[in-house]
Length: 338
Ligand SMILES: NC(=O)c1ccc[n+]([C@@H]2O[C@H](COP(=O)([O-])OP(=O)(O)OC[C@H]3O[C@@H](n4cnc5c(N)ncnc54)[C@H](OP(=O)(O)O)[C@@H]3O)[C@@H](O)[C@H]2O)c1
Image 1 (cartoon, rainbow, N blue to C red):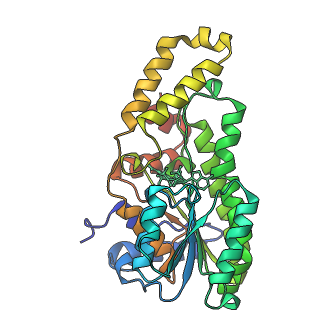
Image 2: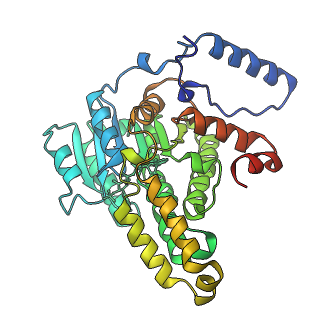
Image 3: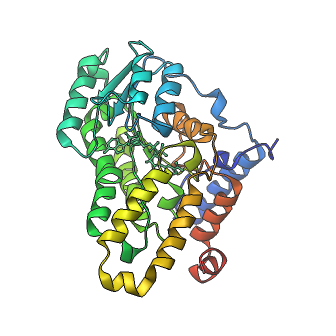
């Protein structure tokens, strides 16, 4: 039975060892979690009832699936969509459900005015605004690639605007409602928010930032009864729209054209093309089943004892993350980087 547990079921609460007593308590909890695999299983969690959640980035990928899944669980879903005004296919599908519990909202997390408007729409549509909003899932995100010397400052800022500042902006706007409900904040980070990698600095920086923001917020919200969780998916590229060959080609062309001549000459086109070929292989890589991510978010929203961190990822990435985050860099770098 134990073997049937996937990595993302492994208890992932962050633990601080302040004294011997807390260490002993931690060991007791760990041993009970490991020896009773059904303890805190995702399946037994209560449904959404009449609770309401805002999910950002619902046009595609995890956000789209989440919106449908949470609606199926009985939640009222405010589905923030980047391209609602442009009638994107994902938005149309959610609207075609014709449910008064599924409300798509135009929401670009880079634009404060769209966030403020979304919060107004939420307030107007909550059955009892005094009871607040149960949850916000900060899912909207973009990705890119490229070595530090290949990445323009504009690119760093563009990715941070969505992944990091978009998360901060949306959370701050929702917190008064979430506090009222003693609800949940669920931030979609990434395994790249725990361990860095070459050619991923614009993305890693933002996801490390999301992790830090979530920790600070968790400490601050504890007295209010608001729980903050981070979901750190592994590789699900094949299942979502995060990368496509077209997007990679467009990024690469722009990147090469804007590179300073000295960098072009030092690295050379051959090196650039080889890196590009590696990136292209990622488009079809990873798991095509997003269930572990969807289940993690659902657990974070519905369990009375949500985890601090969820790790929906396959064994390869889970072990790599443990090694990268627990062993001295001199060892882990040798194993995975150099
Ligand atoms: N897929 C993976 O392997 C993986 C792994 C770890 C973490 N993640 C994280 O999971 C989250 C969801 O990504 P995904 O994989 O599901 O990719 P996705 O299919 O591209 O979904 C991202 C969503 O965010 C939307 N979005 C982009 N910019 C936005 C903005 N400024 N405001 C509001 N929405 C915006 C996108 O809209 P458009 O479709 O209209 O552009 C899209 O609907 C992201 O935070 C990502 O970093 C993904």
